[in-house]
Amino acid sequence: MLDDALIARLRDLHSGPDRGYHAWSHPLALLDLFEIVRDRLNDPLAVYCAIVLHDAIYEPRARDNEARSAALAARLLNGVVPPATLARTLRLIEATARHAIPADLPPDEAADMAMFLDMDLSILAASPEAFDTYEAGVRHEYREVPEAAFRAGRATILEGFLAREALYMSPWGLDAFERKARTNLIRSIAALRDGKRQADAQTP
Image (cartoon, rainbow, N blue to C red; front, side, top):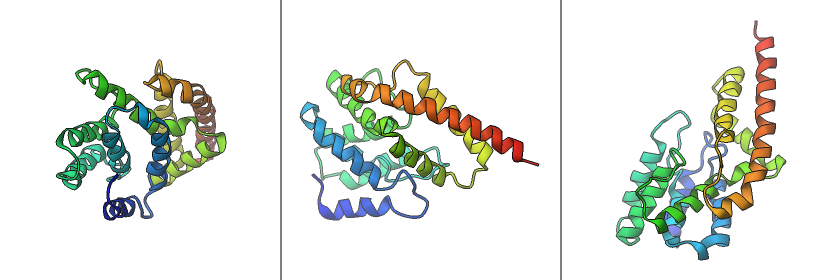
């Protein structure tokens, strides 16, 4: 949907030693899901663009990755996609900051956003092996954080997800991912909390 030169640039942006989970493999996995649901989307081009651009800027300890990725998308896609599609793309990217849908969106755009955000969290419902690889990738991105502190912080984040009434917002996402994701989260939180206790015990 975008030309090869732009895709190559985005692939390069997703490379480098600091990237773990948020490498080019992440949008590629989402594109596989996109092919499954594209006929259900109201603006598939906007969702496609958001998939390949939402983590174009990613610095683990930065708090403005989403805003910066949206700003980059605005520059790269201006004149490439229709203005309405570009505006939707930017809102999709910005929504990954909180994984929440703004209340004032039109129903068709809100439906697309729900499916996009569900795709973005689909890794939580992966096989146990793939989920553990995902967690290892996140740990790599925060490798400078001491082990006990990382485990405590990561457990808190995952507990926040688990506390939601529903992790996924579209009927498709709920059916495809909800149960498996909760199983993975419960298992991972237990391992993180147990590992933190062990790390704390080993601290002089």
